[in-house]
Amino acid sequence: MKAIILLGAPGAGKGTLAEGVRNATSFIHVSTGDMLRAAIKAGTQTGLEAKAFMDKGELVPDNVILRIVSERLAQGAPEDQYMFDGFPRTLEQARQLDETLAQHDAKVNQVFLLEVPTPVIVSRLSGRRICKSCGAVYHVTNIPPKVADVCDQCGGPLYQRPDDSEATVLNRLDVYQRQTASLIDFYERKGVLVRINAGSDPQSATAELLSKLN
Ligand code: AMP
Image (cartoon, rainbow, N blue to C red):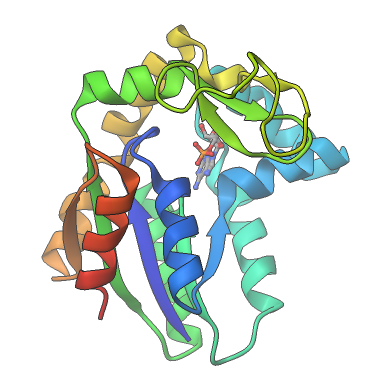
């Protein structure tokens, strides 16, 4: 088993980069945010537990996150290579991940820190729109759909994630600083942190990441 992590503030482009890496490698993309949104859509107990936290931009409790991640890893095979996106987000999650990987004789191989200036992040998130039907991602000015509020790919309606409103975005950035940013130091000390300039276009950030991937 092999594990890499995409670390960065909300809006740093973790999901977009993950897609680029997945297309170019055999890494399996594990996004806890996507898993939680799927759980909410399916109306499961986990979804019910998570929704109120997510809508406010707060972190979902560690025990819920660790449960869904370990359930996901338990379905996998020993040779699997995982790319975690949006996980871990707290030191407790990072420590538990180390323990879980150790049980599989594995460790975190590399942690890619996506560095983006804060004003760029706020504009990316508050302008983000998503297709309700197929999940394609747009931006009101950077990646506008051909017809306003309609998906180019499937014709589905575009919507704004409830946690992408400007007030919630600012709270999510604050939560990142308070609860997640300490992971930078944690992984730097382990010698696995790799910095990526993710402030411009996703293609060059993806290329930089792929060139630094061991
Ligand atoms: P994301 O799609 O990664 O931006 O995640 C959206 C929301 O899901 C976050 O704002 C949190 O409320 C929740 N979430 C996702 N991953 C985690 C995690 N590892 N720990 C706690 N909450 C999470």
